[in-house]
Amino acid sequence: GWKVSKEACDAITIPESFDGVYADFADKMKQAGYDLASHKGEEVKRFTYSVDNYGSSAVTAELLLTTENELICAALIEQKPDGFTEPV
Image (cartoon, rainbow, N blue to C red; front, side, top):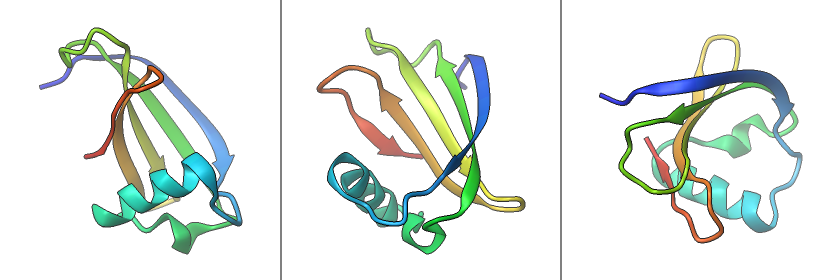
């Protein structure tokens, strides 16, 4: 399994409209079954973890978005300009 560290949790609001990078992110997540559009305007919790043993030379983060009782998004994000974003 993955070794994670640097957990952070904060509240964010899903934008009312998606454009640019966020639109691309939402489309990729929808293809994996995470429909962020159905949560537009909602405040959600964002959990981020640094994945220490993913194998990439760049920092890789795991992102989870949740409502009170539901996981609405899970993704791995390689934090560099041309890095990947993959649903989990």
